[in-house]
Amino acid sequence: MKKSRTKRAFLNVASSILSEFISLVCGLILPRLILSSYGSAYNGITQSITQFISYISLMKAGIGGATAVALYKPLAENDNEKISEVLAATEEFMRKIAMLFAGFVIIFACVYPLLVAEEFGWLFTASLVLIISISTFGQYYFGFTYQMLLSADQKDYITTFLNIITTIVNTIISVILIRGNHSIHVIKLGSSLAHLITPLSLYFYVRKKYRIIDGIKPNKDVIPARWDATAHEVASFINNNTDIVLLTFFTNMSEISVYSVYHYVISNLKKIVTQVTVGFGAAFGDMYVRNEIDLMHQNLGIFELIIYSFTSVLYSVCFVMIIPFVVLYTKGVTDIEYVRPYFALVTILASVFNCFRIPYRVIVINVGHYKQTKNGAIMEAVINIVVSVIGSICFGLIGVALGTLCAMAFRTLQYAIYLSKNIMYRDLRYFIKHVALTFAIIAAVFLISKLYMPATVSSWFYWVVYAAVTTIIAAALTISTDYLLYKEDLFNLINKLKRNLLKKKTA
Image 1: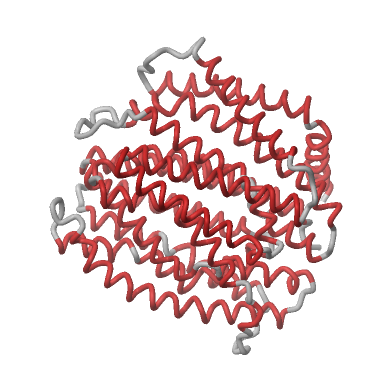
Image 2: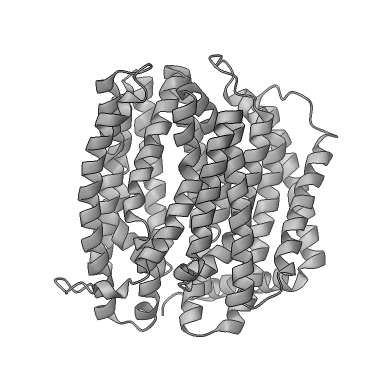
């Protein structure tokens, strides 16, 4: 028998949390080595190129979400012909996108060096652009289509385990090359080749495990929501990537390096919260096509409890420990000031709002309401761009963070209102209560930390100790609040865990 939706969801969550932990650890190692071995400017340019290349990836916007929605029903009905038609249409589209991507990268490699000509030579920068783009091309050409199939079938854990392997291999190769004093080009080439492991493995795995009908005619009508989904992906992309692009135009590579240190930590916390949701989207999509609305209501309560609880704990610790972390992480790097507490505050708040929206966005997207909510997505992007441009000119680093915060807050409220009025028909006070309690917990942990945290954390050992103490306090406050105010949802979650653990033991 197939694994139940709940069991797959928990397997996806467990593997994703493990993956994010490994990515977080490995990701801390490499930038630090680059900073200490090559300097802030080299770290900044690699971050900048990566972000610009990800902008080119907007060509694929919408196809992933539309493909997943189109696959829910045929997967539920075991309709291999329809599944094959969807995959054929998606694969045909992605192969074209891969070739277009290659063309745009070549153009970008010729133009981008002009933006950083004062710090790096044309050939140096152009060749670095081409090297960094290799892994993205491989993902589009080989792996993206099959990743969407596994995601729709609640088997994200397969992709996740491959990503874990890729991350470890990439880190080992990069560390060896850095310690060997190789050029940044050789290091990034090794990294790009390592990142081909996942797309190539997905291609061969799905072709072997699923009964895909080769040569079937692509039915392009099965993904009609693609253009509406594009608006959502473009808005999400702008919110996640505008900052570095604007900093490239209005500041310098060293300032981008400062941004990247904070962004790395905070964005990885967001990824941990997001990874907890892996598999939930497909589960809600499956419930919706089966018209299990009451079950959706029950699971939304559990979903909210998980998201807001993780957000409360992780970001409470982040508020307390981010500045001590940056001080220790950049110790010995003196070419620019890395301690920016106000920038940290605004960036953390933006990320918290991004986490708040997760339950509502996941349901809206996975029931296919792209068209109905695309105006909100467009407005989100406009708010981010306008406020960030003005802010970056007036305030520099903090200005771009303010743009992201305004956009995140707007879109989160819009998602919550839409879900309450059009899909789940529930009181908006559920959302407001969750948000207020989360901020109350974060503020309480921050104030309590003043009783035991010194002004300066002298070593990594003490940083880990204080981080552990802060985590325990945040978790205790969060669990107590859940028990007092969300007892039903808490026990529903515990019962689901018990049922699946008992099934595993008796299997």
